[in-house]
Amino acid sequence: MTAFIPPAKPLIGEEERAAVDRVLRSGMLAQGPEVKAFEEEFSAHFGLGRACVAVNSGTSGQHLGLLSSGVRAGDEVIVPSFTFAATANSVALTGATPVFADIDPRSFCLDPGAVEAAVTDRTVGMMPVHLYGHPADMPGLEAVAARHNLQIFEDAAQAHGASLGGRPVGTFGSFAMFSLYPTKNMTSGEGGMVSVANPEIEHLMRLYRNQGMEVQYHNEVVGFNTRMTDIHAAIGREQLKKVAGWTATRQANAAFLSANLRGVTPPPVAEGAVHVYHQYTIRVPEDRDGFAKALREEYQIGSGMFYPVPNHRLKPFSVAVDLPATEQAARECLSLPVHPSLAQEDLERIVTAVNALAGAGA
Image (cartoon, rainbow, N blue to C red; front, side, top):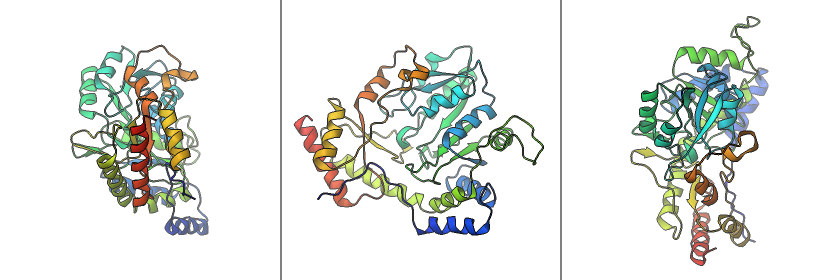
């Protein structure tokens, strides 16, 4: 029987297991020395040149980053609608309003012109998403931000190691959130890492994640419990040693697919961009859902539809707004397996299946 090719596959080795066991034997399980080391090693590994703050999830990181950057009720933050709901959720959790702007159909990331058109006198910032591992148009967005005195908040959940013009994502905004969920390019089991632009944001991040205190029982603000455990940090530290190799494999897998696929539109890469291929996303203009079903049932190949319901059509955010590129992407996008566990025969089967289905008009 043909083995199923999953759309994603977390990679956990003996090193991660040993690291968890080391922490368990230490008796210090909550936030401690492993978290501190992970924060420092993460910043150094990805060349961020910034302090990093570890939290219990990417969504927590976005939420606390926004609060620490001064976003409050009555403010507006411009976000893409073509993204996971956590992007808009994090804005709404501060009491601010997420305002949806359209994407560039080539990169699937926020379009600077659409952002500028959405600016009002209540707009305090924008949150570009480096979607699928491709950096957003940061020079274009930075120009809009400068003209309107706006902050930039990076959603880098899927973009560990991506860069634009030699500058790593995570170094453009007031803060940037990297997700460490199991299906991301690296994981800590669950968690998030936030790079911060200045000591003030860092201080507030550390307060908010720990009940509002840096010194025990001396609470300075109303805070949360969003700490990362030493168990999760130990896993993340081991993953940091492997993520560069995994990224290179993702990029090689993507290059093979792009060179050999026919009849579909592979993901383009902007000039000067380093794409880390959290997802390898093609467009299927006709019957994307049927195409995915045929991949699964006829060829035993999994795929992902990210994101078939744009945020502006979700119940919590339902709003009438014209986002044609977003709506088209939601209908057409399909993500093929590109993860490091793929063997050469897996890649060849993916190419054979996609080319056959595209040629047959499936």
